[in-house]
Image 1 (cartoon, rainbow, N blue to C red):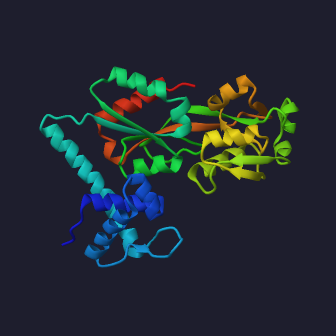
Image 2 (cartoon, rainbow, N blue to C red):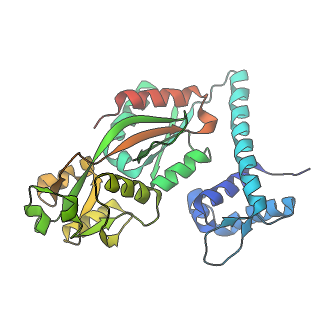
Image 3 (cartoon, helix red, strand yellow):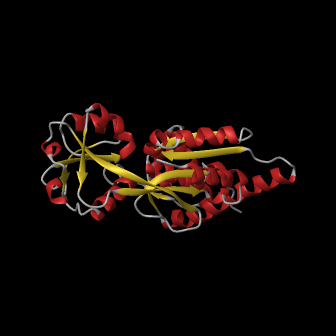
Length: 300
């Protein structure tokens, strides 16, 4: 009989979602040797390696590892459900509620939504976190949070995903950039200039690429990439290229003259704001209350 600890299975799934042991260590805030220890214990009990060991490459699953993924997700979900049912049977409603939000949403659009929820539901023990799109999605997939809020050009399939609004994006350049003199620009105009983009091969980079493609921007030269919005703004202010970000996050820079908004001919570029419930939280009243509040109070 196989003997797994739920903690080791959770660590295993985070390694899978992060595609690296170091990424999992950062996500869980534990040491990399501790991550390796959990994986080694699982492999010892299973009698087979779970990951292909190759220095400097992403953690790739073996056949045994691929089989364990589905089992681990199901078992962790059932464990969470059992905990909730036991609390309910004992008359102890689980009042803990965790939400992870993609940074552009958290900074610009969600604080008032979460603060009003906390005021309307003082009994809930609310935990808020923020991160990149990849980090937020990893947290909701593994059930480390109840609700995830993020931006996407495409809408994931499934009843656990809910569109809560449409978020406009803006293009920005330094005031002395050649494009700053134009009232509107075309996709062809933009192809002659360098862009500043988010990290290559990230989930949000893929969504941005889809949004650009829908606007007719198929080719672009990349002068620099950054994961931090503040760094991206500094690069744009220095004249290193065109940046694209959630419009409200640039409003103060446009008002002060630090950046100049350039308007793209055609329909405005937008992404969906999406809220996703973790599989373990689909039947939780706390998660349903949060989703209802976000849907009713989200605004630009």
